[in-house]
View (cartoon, rainbow, N blue to C red):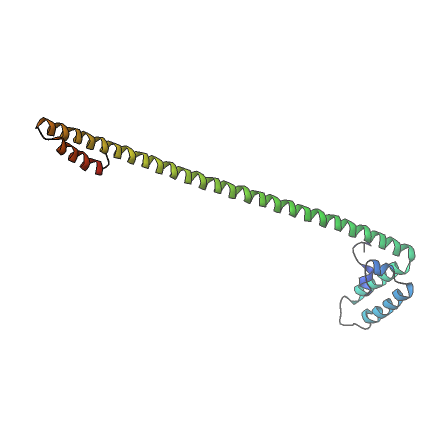
Length: 179
């Protein structure tokens, strides 16, 4: 059994981490005796893993009762925990970078959609302007036709000998129609 695979404090039902490192030998021995009574193979004849569980308990106790092994276990555990913390931080940073990249992608996509809408709106406005310009040209052409009709009518009335009064009346009727 590797020293880093198992938390020996947990095997003895003791607090782990910094709290476990502060425990006295007396507290560790007391926890071992209590757990040994519970896991002893004679007390658990129906459990096929009783011998293995008791052996793990004895190994954990042997490591924790020897000061050198206990200090080695505690320092190894701290290093393992700090490595796990570094890994967790690195994974969290990677997730944050991925989220930021996804957010930038969403922003770019939304911006492209917004610019496409603006371009479509501008195209519609330009089409509307062209339509209005065509309408103005048509109206201008109609006004020219009316003006030509007016000139023809006035010139006919003058050539037929009608009075200035009649010419003014014709002019007034065409003015109302907006030349």
